[in-house]
Length: 70
Image 1 (cartoon, rainbow, N blue to C red):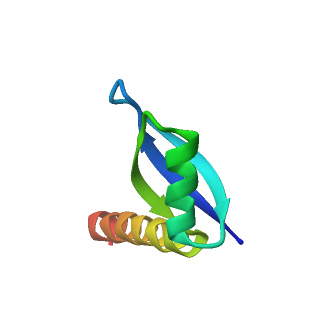
Image 2: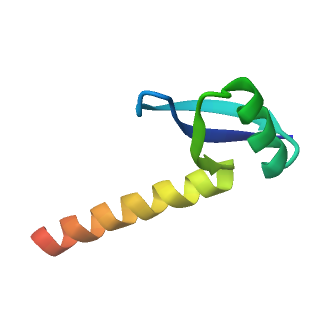
């Protein structure tokens, strides 16, 4: 099973994060729809996708730093 991270949008337009453990991405969407019927999923990531996104952010930040001071 995989622990997915979801960014949800509630009925007031506010975002919040939550985790869900599921076998597949589709199952994760189903669980979230059942647990949060008034909300919609904005983003759903598995741990590898989260790591890739974070690494990209760190790389861009480092590149900007190097450009500024390099």
